[in-house]
Length: 494
Image (cartoon, rainbow, N blue to C red; front, side, top):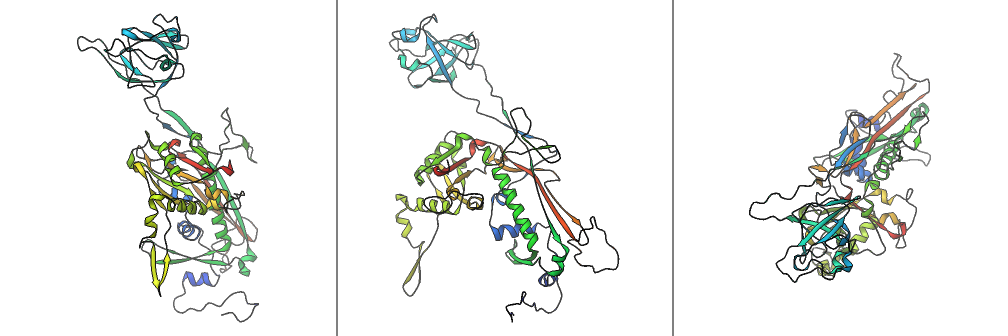
């Protein structure tokens, strides 16, 4: 108990076996420095962040600290724009042809690629009405290709409106059409080569020093942390304050690197920064920088229908309905805004007041409960929320939102942690065997022999009365398919 305002510590009473926890309680034992428990304690006491969330997926390890690459395969189908259309001689613009393609007459189409060949049936903006069969292989005209085509039709009166043949209209292949008797060739197979993505690992480093007199005077006070193990049983560990500060700050810096790391690679392949040693500092692109620019959206007003329409745009033609589960990483104000948006949806108005949400607490009193953290919408679209404490960090984020709180807290990141060809779309990348480096430099004292309790001389690497702790992380992020992520940002941050 405390008996005086001058008293700094409360006495600790215990009986029986003197355990490591007791020693920690009396400030006689140094902290847990190297332990996987740090990860669990951090997550329970600070909250899940991008690091702990990504740790649920396998880390991609590489064997050397060199740029890492991966291939991204695009669709093997595409459409291409029409440059110009001409009459059958290729000498007169289609705008001077009265009824193009009427009664089996032919026209010529100029494209910038040799994507089509003889026997292919191609279509423009009205594929249901006008189908064009390529009658011979294209002729190269400079950098472009000229095709001779005719309509696939039995109607001799059918012709193509000139508006369907203007430059800029987009065209694609339907199939290859041939005769049933003694046909000589079919349509060719065309290929789309995969393109190569590249990123580099970044290295961050942090250190701190513990003076020997702080150990002796008890100023590096231990903190008790409780957590629940896998069986649900509450456990406890003692970690000194300097070490906890060091671990939590390092963890935040690691999370910021993975989220907001910026590539410093120049157009020539060099790197834009050098360290004190004179060697290159290589900075890899973090999670946000790898999101496709076309998938970054700004908003003034937020509602659930607008969010669903945005998700449809990211899904249709790209994701099957059973894979449209989007994790929305956001701040606490974003979670509240999402809850209000779901609550205000007209289709959900009635269920808000059923017995699942209103609870009788006795004496005729009622409590209203529940927060929407998930929303299942149309066409298989499903949203789930994940709190990202980085978006609520008032130190890094400075701009306030007119509705209250930080503007960054209203940002949503669509985190597609689904798989692409069996691999996670987003995963950490680490250097095998060297992902995290954790070392201490002993002086007259060190973390494991803080007191001189032996007559035998020990080893010191420095004459300083104290010790240093150093930690480094070498790693990065790979977003396998940047088109499967998106950022939804308040317009005030534009």
